[in-house]
Image (cartoon, rainbow, N blue to C red; front, side, top):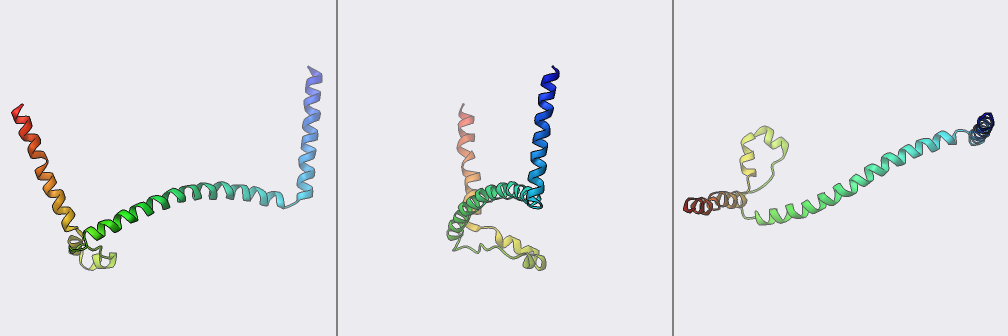
Length: 121
């Protein structure tokens, strides 16, 4: 058992000496490498998230452009924040007419057959 402990202690001394020699030879570059490793960890994660966020944003910008083209003949526009601060009721004009009308008709017309079928059963 004592030989095992002596063997481990001698290996750890050599490992410690090797690390000290590397630190002394490398100098301040050791700290720079540690900072760079931390930077890679942070930038790697944020770049990964940014990749997916930009893809989702690109997809929804295409959908939003098609929606604006659908609503092109109504008075649908998105007012700026400064305009909304001056005239809060301007937000009523941001309601898309066609989409609001279609959703209202669907909200009324689709439950009617369901109610009718439930009363028959």
